Length: 171
Image (cartoon, rainbow, N blue to C red; front, side, top):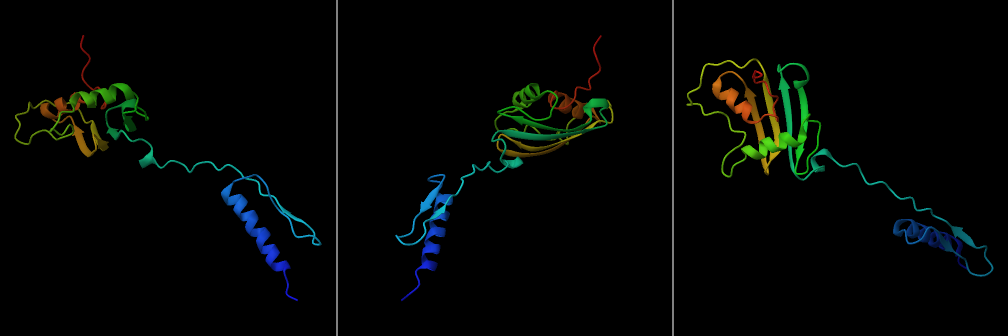
């Protein structure tokens, strides 16, 4: 006579595994044929939390990282800005997104450097620098800003409040 018990154990284990994987029910029961003790396999289905969202998958809209140095006080630091929808650690998300949107033009790089052949005033706006990276309107952004002359100051001021407002207060 052949042994049936190992096959029955395998069948019960397979049934329990199917119950867990399929999550069709919270419990699965396998019963043996008459004359053999009934075996019950109960599997508790635990709802799993979704995996954490990766930073690059977090938002489908525009994202910029702004690093400001030597602007003074709270203006210095690295800030995240998400637009469309808005969010991030930037101190003025809504208006910063508006400033970039206001300067965006079809066929023109919003973050382009000042023209090399431009005629600029020899005004010095201070030691502040900024580095902006990320994606805007589906395009990569990697731009640096300073206030070394009139052209650079104007370029910086165009993106206030994405970049801190360092203009002298009017009286």
